[in-house]
Image (cartoon, rainbow, N blue to C red; front, top):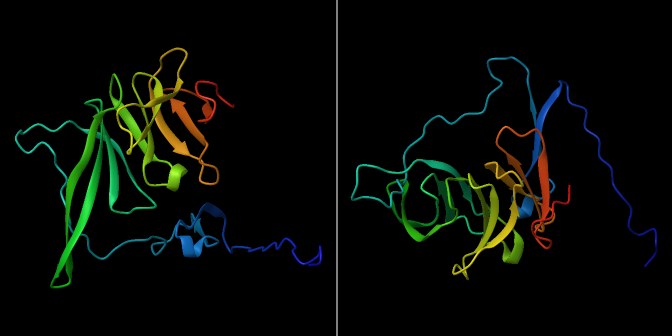
Amino acid sequence: MSLHGKRKEIYKYEAPWTVYAMNWSVRPDKRFRLALGSFVEEYNNKVGETETRLECLLNNNKNSDFCAPLTSFDWNEVDPYLLGTSSIDTTCTIWGLETGQVLGRVNLVSGHVKTQLIAHDKEVYDIAFSRAGGGRDMFASVGADGSVRMFDLRHLEHSTIIYEDPQHHPLLRLCWNKQDPNYLATMAMDGMEVVILDVRVPCTPVA
């Protein structure tokens, strides 16, 4: 095979307006589809649905009128029937969704708790599934105790502390690197910087 058989292809698209946002498709069969958004102040410059409906209400505390507020949730990209939520009651809950038989034109959707665990010592502020290990079983969370913790649905008897804020400031958000699941980013409450972490080297920020 010739060394010149492969070459980089560069495509250029010039939008007729200032580009405001962009994002890659998460569909495996559309990996190179890129969507662009503008900030043109026009009435038709919007995306919307003509109707919405409640398909499923997930509630694992049906015996009480009080339900601890949720702080975040994340869909599993590999298994769309898995959903994770975090709450101020120190827990993370993994839900399993089920689609039943078609009734008219509506698929009946129901959900159940696959597992609920005490994830942190204080409120949990964010949860995100990782693409590591097949992309289905591993997730991480951050919370008011200032730590980043990683869990594996196959081994929930223990977790791994990836990072602890030196001043124990609450950590608000985390985000996995979509290209390399070994890296994730997090940020602290009222912070002005983002901490980059490598899960292979716990407790030592990369940047």
